[in-house]
Length: 286
Image (cartoon, rainbow, N blue to C red; front, side, top):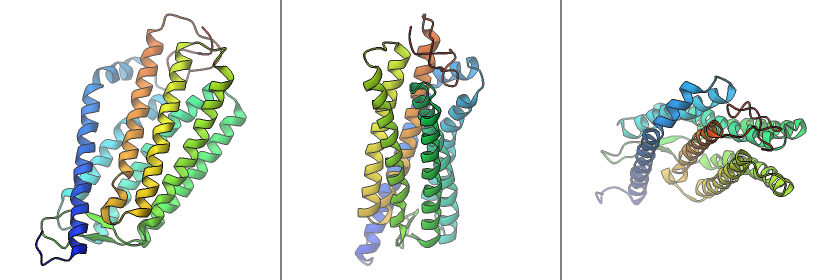
């Protein structure tokens, strides 16, 4: 970087370059994952019946393409203004919220199935989830309204970032951390209650998926809370959409695995309803 630019301008420019590199890598990985699973996905889309979970799958799978298109435009198109950055960032925030809400819905339904369709547990999960969504929307868009977007003063550096006042962007990830902690607690409670009495394959698959998904969610939520509070420039938000994409990949991959596992099984299942999650009816005992 030219010495005529301040250290602050150089640091901001480097953060934008690293952010763009990370986002481009995420888009490449997403396309690679899509190419690797296209055969299994094609079978699922053609052979499974339409229900709310298949709709969730389609939204979770394809909304990230819109998120990547919007964000890569923001990262690579030069001469953005602060208003343009804010407008496109708001669009990206909407796509991010849709993606993470759909991803979490998969595992709320799975946890509901693990709890044998317990209405009280389901109501508690939905009310907590609704509070997280409302709190996240308020935090995201209030931060966007109060924190101005800035671009680099160095020629050739594209992209923009929120400078001051964006510290409240940690709030959605703190709320998500609380939600994931609640859901993994419910799942582990099921493990403790049923590990001696249940040996059904689908039940075990769902338990393993849930624990791994929630553990990843807790880890990335903690990382995003810390980076939002401790880092400056574009560094503060560089892992936020990484978490969104990771959730989407895990949710769709795990649902494909569950669907194909259930489709290929030879045993009859009875007790916990999987009508929302797989083509068969039940999964408690073989």
